[in-house]
Image 1 (cartoon, protein in one colour):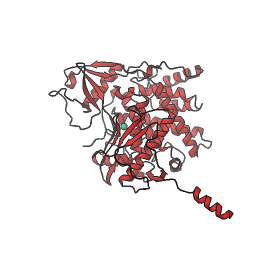
Image 2 (cartoon, protein in one colour):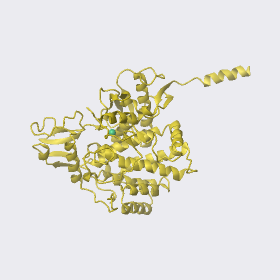
Image 3 (cartoon, protein in one colour):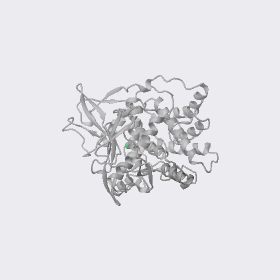
Image 4 (cartoon, rainbow, N blue to C red):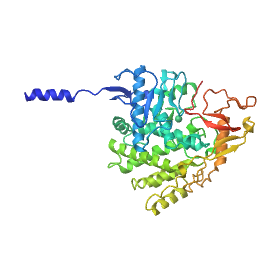
Length: 477
Ligand SMILES: [Zn+2]
């Protein structure tokens, strides 16, 4: 009798929850997992997928049903993490964000304040779908998260604001992946506990990277779209070329994003080693805890940081200040990484730490970092326009007088808001990223690009520059 009852109870307890099958990270790495069925309608941060919902089940990779559920799983996992950490009540466009999993032929993906848009395209190993990669899905979702958290960055005429958005997208991919216990365990095993080395966690969007590499060999890194383990240091983007091969730093936002992403990832590795009870063999629980600490420090710094021309230095300085309230080991580690990468000058890193120590607690913010940005009218003549162009400038007051460093360690005086906006606008037109619309019909500079991040719109007799989307910048058609 007893035996039979136990057996019956065991069978009921083992009644399997419905699950779906999904990729752990990029499809190129090939690691599958079974996960509970994600609830896309869950609030806050609900999603709405176009088209019918396939019945939840374990589908084979390569099928549309598998692509649906692997994207849904990654989005729900990532959005749940950010929603509780920040916290966020809604997306910038509203309570529900549309997801368009296959918008046609392109090696691309973008966020346009209406939806997350994904595509498919050719690669040497067959067709790749950008919406099938949790790396790419969580990157695009990261744009939408940051847009909700800091909407002024959307229209800011600033290289650093645009690059920071790309960096946050990559950080969103990394942090969302780290919410998976089996991935944390695998990465620690693969790296021998030394997180800051190339791994499938640091290599982002390997599959799309391979597809683009086949068409443009120097457009992406040798092993991925971007690798968070890199040696790029800060240089004033105003003085960098507007584009270049992936091996070099340019002011193009995806390229320049690698400076901040590299610092974030390096800090993650150093913080893990500092807090692990056995620094040479951190546990997956310790990795989870440190990753969440660093993500929390980052989003709280973003909330408080003003949108200024040297945004990287402002966010970094605020991170150093906040980090001390989380763990007394963290500020020195963050200072070390930010100074090594010249995101903070030696003087700035030291001054910020002294300010922190002199404060009983972080002072209340003035609230200016939540204000809209000031607009400036810049001459449109050199772009073939007969009127000035109105552009939002990185015009907030600086919270700290902190600076990045030049190659010789000297502090770099940050550019004025108008100088930064002018340099950004120049690069947009040089790269063909602006849709002229009806303006400059006979005088425009034509690049023949199909997808553009910005457009010109009429406003009260003037021309206003407006952002349309954040894209992968890899449109190959
Ligand atoms: Zn992006």
